Length: 83
Image (tube, rainbow, N blue to C red; front, side, top):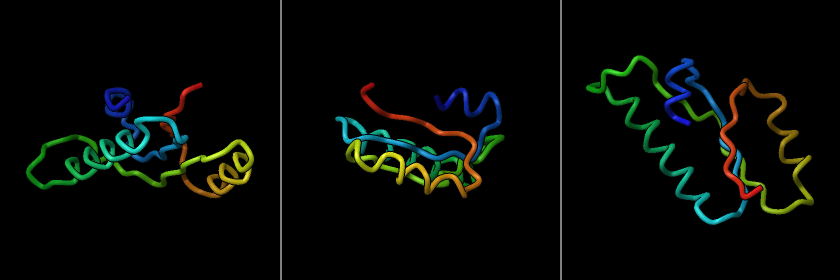
């Protein structure tokens, strides 16, 4: 995923996760990559920026939760789920 972000110069993105195993690790690893890309001594062409993190806990609130993203500038979504 990160290779595609760099390849197409997609620097701003949102993360959508569910409550499956590994979701917290997925978010924290992307946050670490974002922090590393912001370091002054790292010579990267693109600085990553996480615009928002959305955690969908149940099927009942999917529409409401994703509706909140409608008004943002997010165009790239990284999805971590089981299905």
